[in-house]
Image 1 (cartoon, one colour):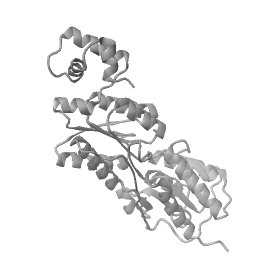
Image 2: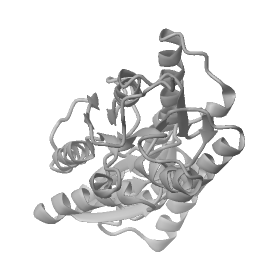
Image 3: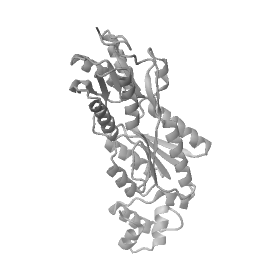
Image 4: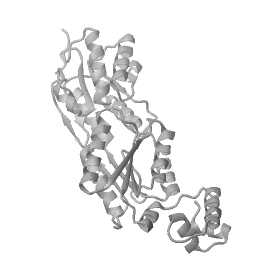
Length: 337
């Protein structure tokens, strides 16, 4: 990664002159500025914007990247982050990655260019290698939410996906269900991999023979949950319970099951993950694992504020757990005589 020293070496200017040109402070000839900016472009140099903001006394913005703006999940995240920013007189600049890996990275670059002092990134797609690479590239503190990093490598805050999956699936199994379907994302993202692997391992531990059509691929939205349920029914159905990877998936699936003449929860017990507000008011009210999103966002904002204040904050990888909210979308399985 290029440094100010590299620019000095190429241009022949002193570090003080290069620094003034980068930070736009002090007197620098226009011709000199052009040479320095050309060298920056040649080296793909991105300045440390924390230092730049301090030089300009303008470090008042926190950048927030979310995977997308769809659904109550991210609305809850934005609401809590905005509340903290407002209480501390900070500006929150928000953008999204359109639920695509490359667009997530572009969203990060856009916030760097807007001179945010610290970034909070809620990613669904970035791998550990991606996170470490972009963190080094931009030279700016990033607090990742939803992904874990080794504790000595950066700031990461995430929830225990394995625990959430175990709680939901174990609840259905405790009610006597052994044929448990799963609708969720493909096992290509970190979240998708953990939830699928945990679900399959639990069935194996219980001696349950998994059938391929029990799993239906679904993105985290209502329409996809509806489509997944229709596809599952077309392929023969046969399960007495469903583990949905999100409340939105469960909402869509419940509608599809009703249209097919199934009674809920008599013919299909359901448990999911999220605990969206509406989940408690469905018919039947949905059993779901509450994600500790409020706690995670408040912790991320607290770290961001300390960094902006110039405090030394050790790298950390902090995990949060939620709890299963048991409602009446699950019923004890009764074998037909």
